[in-house]
Length: 435
Image (cartoon, rainbow, N blue to C red; front, side, top):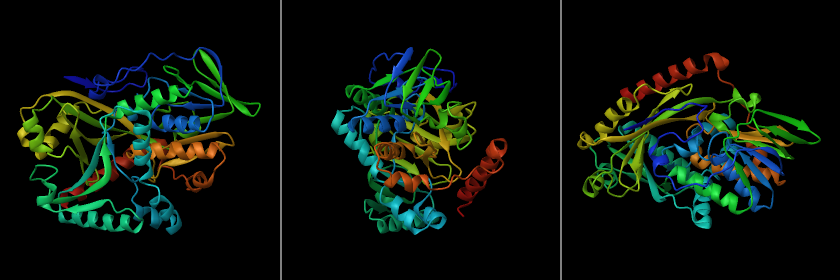
């Protein structure tokens, strides 16, 4: 079994199922000497790749600096589910920021998934895309919440959701654990690392350069532009974009305290027989439950069950990933008790205190996007497009998001982990008690 944790000084992909089944990428150079470009993007995850791709399609010259490899962070390790929306619900957004902002967000939360599909089709990316995702409920209270969510999303013009009773959800997932759920016909799932690698290939086909193993050591404003320094080279650019998210490190000390790294874990079984795979997920749809600390799972292209869940605030690894996840898997599918686990890994996402991602500028020509709070697959692709719009001169959508105030974690960096951990215990207890 391949058990993969994470070290920030590692530059190779963690030993995940995704890395083992990735489409072969080309060798990409580390930055050496001086490179001159219009725009330098820091980070080759989804945010950076989406930003670069949209800028290239608008005619800009772009270079990407990646400290490890394309898709090394959350973009190449996540659950692979295309789930619409932000972590913060639309009703929370409405209460916190008002009707106008909620209407704005409601009009674009499905756009990220559309961007992914457009990119896959346009650049022929092979990443095992499969349609639909299902939200699963254990209790009547959770079903009521799903019903309210369906009505709320319909209010904002999203009518792709369908409530499922116990017999109907059994068409998607064969277990006695759930009493019902809701299917989002506009959701989907795919191989996340292969999506990132395909987007990188598209970027290079449009003339951009991606430098791997090129960690940003410092940046300096000079003559209306920037000098970005790595260990062995510099990039001179007019515009700088930080897209490091949970793995930005010290590349921008001003951004580091705005989000908190949170690790989540995934494991992959051995390939299941066709009969067993069909007996648990007959429609090959991805599933996530609706608890505060949720489980999520789906089948891979070679019929492994990919099962993920749990959080560790601060971004550290649990000592036993399989020991943490396997009992939850067996509660849903006890028939998999004898199935071997071939891979288990962890990775960080960036949590913002508000659970709303942050988009903004540090100055006139330094931009950033981060803090997707576990909903980064779609959010990162959307924010990449909005960043490209802003750099190209259209600030209409950028200004709406950048005007949302940043809310610091209570207690700052010292107390943000215990504060968030206590909060998660509280909500987990409510889930357990059904209140």
